[in-house]
Image (cartoon, rainbow, N blue to C red; front, side, top):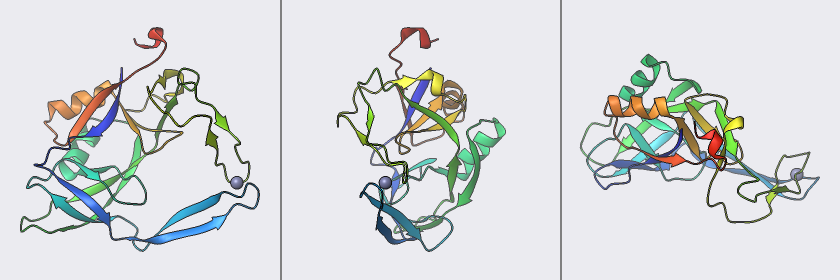
Length: 202
Ligand SMILES: [Zn+2]
């Protein structure tokens, strides 16, 4: 069984609303397909986050700002993932944290996720259209992305993965969810990632 990684969005937790290291976007037009290519420009090697929201610092911090879809975890969560030898990441960067409250900000780390999995395109009636060989961008044949189905054969067996076609989505193994629960890591929420083919459920 695989799970979508989501955030506990209850008001007690802080969240990151802005990455101060994002200076802007470099934009140019692909000479081959005419689509715009926008690349974020960062002034620092790691995210510089401004926190807002509730009083508690969660172990999984939600990021609502523009730029890359960061996976931000506390020092405790990082230690737990490393000690449990969970796979699917090859490093992390320490973030710079600004909090508008008086509480001393907790440290956060930006996890570099390398694990991969992808949608079951056939089950979702999705097709990539007009893929450009130059820049790799494509269009979808429909805008509706629900219901979402995972193709288990695309899973590289990592405990944490990004969805190859939409890297903002993160998928976790059962072992990952069990580890989070065992150590009472806060801010994590999971929902079942479904497969269209019941034979893949095992
Ligand atoms: Zn192109």
